[in-house]
Image (cartoon, rainbow, N blue to C red):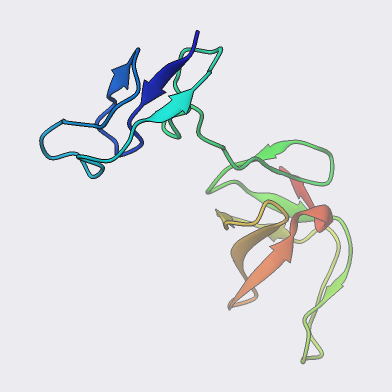
Length: 120
């Protein structure tokens, strides 16, 4: 079934093409866009939000605040510091990248790649 929706955030849906007439809508007096959705969610980003899933080297899902262990000796760039395999890292923070996490290790705030981590 073809119908038309407002992309301005007011949630307006119509069986006929036209303009959005909702007061306060960001797209007020703009043309409605054709929507041929099959899931009934009308293409709203809020309804079909992409969720970032971060996984460790074993495929286990990681969350903010999780504790992890290094699975490989890692040398900190620009220094002679090496973090040994088996070192426990507490309280990781997720970034916008599914392959990296922020953490504090050895008194330094660093970014670690998830391929070198295992959830405890």
